[in-house]
Image (cartoon, rainbow, N blue to C red; front, side, top):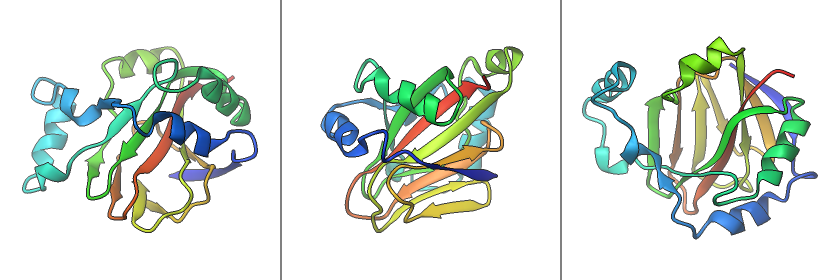
Length: 178
């Protein structure tokens, strides 16, 4: 499900990017999704059953709003996929989780109509106890800061949790093949 693509720590100062966003409000992604109106989201929500709803929270940050577009450009060059559809940084605070889901987007069918979207995720924290990211049947834990993985399908189910002591940050990048 995931293919290791290399490490971006020598081309992007992830500590500086985190410093730039860590105290900004961002957008609490789990609070603005139209869960009851979209069949795919309702299906995910219904499947959560007795999941601890109070633990669900992740915050997104976007280029040219909370961090520099230069980060996205450098990343696109690194993965040799510069035709960016969108990118964002997600933050999961200690004790919070992003439960099993796929990243539904109102425009996901348009993305497919225009080509094959490719998704990448970079672990942008230094490794920290309790930071876990799962895509399909693969769990990432104690990844090096800047490690990048390519997904086999941008709609893959995934989850993230932070049972550690410091915020967990991931950089997410969706683009078309060059």
